[in-house]
Image (cartoon, rainbow, N blue to C red; front, side, top):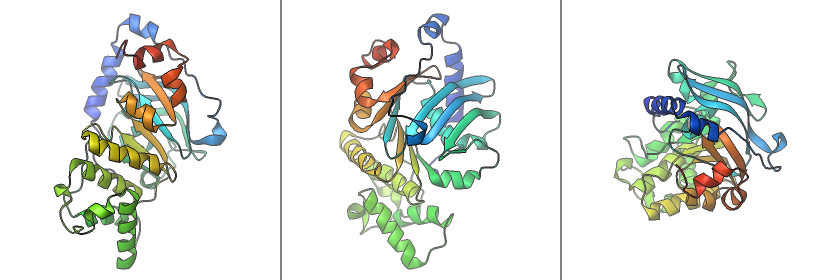
Length: 292
């Protein structure tokens, strides 16, 4: 169950801006993907091969090849409009609901190409959950925010539903804060609590992969710390892919980091290597603030 619709028009504008970037910059930032030896098809939860994505005629992703390892946190960094959020939206096929958007190439999820016409998109979105930048709880009770999502995929008894709701709220460290107001509106929660509720709604469907698109950008530092702690705990059960503009956050919580620019994956390696010994000069220029 998705938390909100993505801003497709904004992404289209980003793609068009990327295509009109000066030829000097395009020459400077040719795609040079470096993959850690630890990242192999055998360790992959998602294996992306020759992926291209288009908003109409505007190409937003260009020949992406990368491994997303199972039960690890992979962060995507890069300037606005470089394709990070678009890449996340490919992984659960959310672009399908918009005309003239298309993906080419392969995205193997446990060995199966999710871009195939034979894939059940509803089942895919249950297995690959997504949480967006702004917390958007449903305008209903805290309890129903979780139960409503589950009912779309499973038939549970009242007791089973109560147990599931409690479990996922405990999983996101929210139970103790809301257990006495489950039947109050979720809109009364703080921003940080709302975002953890949105994460709970995603994990309630028992996904295998969690896509997090700047999940803390709208939160205060204390709420951000709680969500970061939660994300680190979630990797024991889920494969996590997070888009962030906060490079300190990527360094703190991720196992691997990929740097993107102009729709290309420039470098992918362990986060320690990316932030202390990047292989590509353009990666170093970005993380040290020389551009971006």
